[in-house]
Length: 221
Image (cartoon, rainbow, N blue to C red; front, side):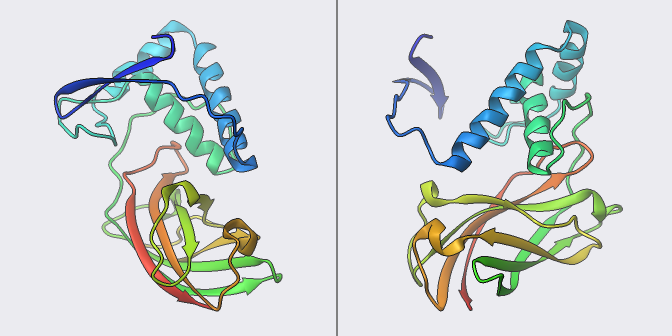
């Protein structure tokens, strides 16, 4: 309402005033914001029957944010925007058609190896295992990561988003994530880094994602 937002946490209602930061954001943040604005505009162009389709599909989709209750679901607008953002991350930005949310396969991800490509680009390879997955090739690994000095703590504001170069090719795959200009991103040039990252899957058929998980590891170059 105006510049005030009301929200619930642990059964208590709180309110806060909207922040008005002077910093316009990084180039990546501004690009992400422009995608979000296009997603909102695309939702407004849908006819009421299509919007209602999205609302019905969302009734069985549990929110990825608390409270994590079975009777707490997202809206059709949320589901549509999630699909739109997912396709944009996969370099396939378009208006998604209504699709039911399908359960993702159990995901296991760990660091495999790293190397430097073309002097300024960091290539990180992850082992991705999708247990009991009939069609692994529909999924792609997405990460938000931060490089710090060894032993350094995680700072969410310094996380940057990247998507694997290709979809998974089997239940047990090695996928590559490239980080261009990695030294400049975090202003660090070290032989060893602490890597903090959160990871999730993108469904290339629907644009949807599963709930992310956190992991940290040491990486030598």
